[in-house]
Image 1: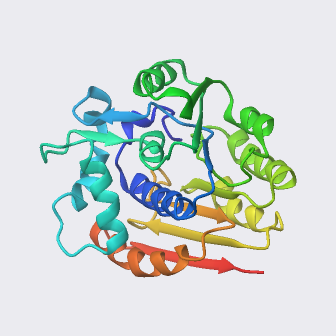
Image 2 (image 1 turned 90 degrees about the vertical axis):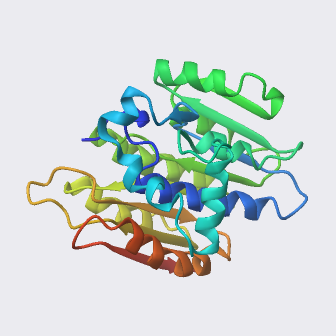
Length: 281
């Protein structure tokens, strides 16, 4: 089971994978002049203090962004990701970590929009504070991101990235992400959907990639990063995956160049590995 409060896990190996991919997709969308939306269904607090009690309790960032912070010779996509994190740490010391909403907001142009949903009361309050001066480009909503997504698709510009990364604390989350994507693809089949999921020693986690492939989307990219072999007792997060529907054509090549280095740098023991597979119409 994972803790719902992302502050416990901010900056860990799973965040490295998720946020590196998020940045690559958002930057791709920004290469064309037409406006786009980014929708984050489970936005969290927006940004995190790594010296807080929550972050220090597990210290997972030390084996995630901490290993990349002063590393030389990183692949270009990893260098780009670290540079965005440095924007929150201008003195060069790693004290703060940006969540997905903050990273996405850095790539918005005047015509682009960011739609954020957060159900947890404390995280919603922090999220509001994070974007208090953002203006109309960013909308923060307290509530269920699955329901919120259904209400806003398709977005007016017909160009959007939807990031879906619930806590997966319950079996319902595994069911709901599939239902959510199935409905979203009917409403907005050309959207880019990026789903994060944990690699855990539980049946639902093992079955999820197959269920996502069976949705019938003609174009998808599936990347996983495991930092160690699964624990014998089945406890703990040994890796994570990203399943992207309608990925940018550039993303697979970028990940082929990036994942081998990330796997070597973030490895926490035997069994560290990555996987990359795709389907194109």
